[in-house]
Amino acid sequence: LKTPGQSDASPHQYLLRHSQKLADYPTLSLSLSLGGKMEISLASLTVSIAIAAVSWWVWRTLNWVWFKPKMLESCLRRQGLAGTPYTPLVGDLKKIFSMATEAKSRPIKLTDDIQPRVMPYLMQMLKTHGRTFFTWFGPIPVIIITDPAQIKEVLNKVYDFPKANTFPMFKLIVTGIVSYDGDKWAKHRRIINPAFHLEKIKIMVPAFHKSCSEVVGEWDK
Image 1 (cartoon, rainbow, N blue to C red):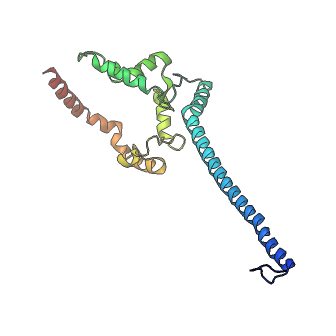
Image 2 (cartoon, one colour):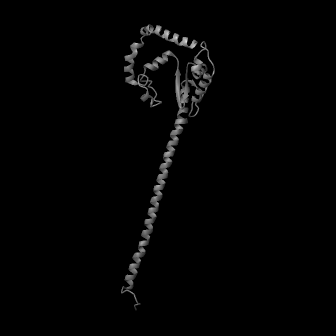
Image 3 (cartoon, helix red, strand yellow):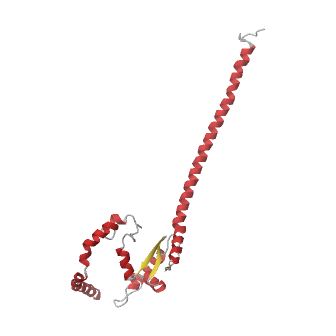
């Protein structure tokens, strides 16, 4: 029997058509599930990359501020060098500036020794640790030598003792033998070396004396 508005389709065709519509729902649910999992995976990947980047930056900072300076300090002490213990990040800079400020605040006479006023920190280190010691410019250790033979060896062996590139802008601001290194330094050193021959310097002694006398005379006035 047919009710009003009922189609001529058989019961089998009716069930087949509706079963196909029902079959589409699991596919839609699966697509939504896969899309949600992909979003979660991308978010997890982003978080993992961010954590890795932060961890790498923290490690580099700790290595620069603490681990590497302490390793260098231990290495220097094993070689028999004396020096100040490392202070994180600032090194001895705070002490250097405070001692310089204190020394300049005290009055001085022309007959007084000028070295404690100009280099108070280095003079104290020389008295405490001897003629060869190390100090800290921030996290960078600096070895101070005062023996003329050692200074000559360091200045002549430019390939064994290259200049430290502590301030990259220094080479752009200051040009000349002070900033040159390697073959370029050796070439310019050979060019200017005759001007610093002992006999030529002796000829300039009267000019040095006259200039210094004029300055001292101005100070006396």
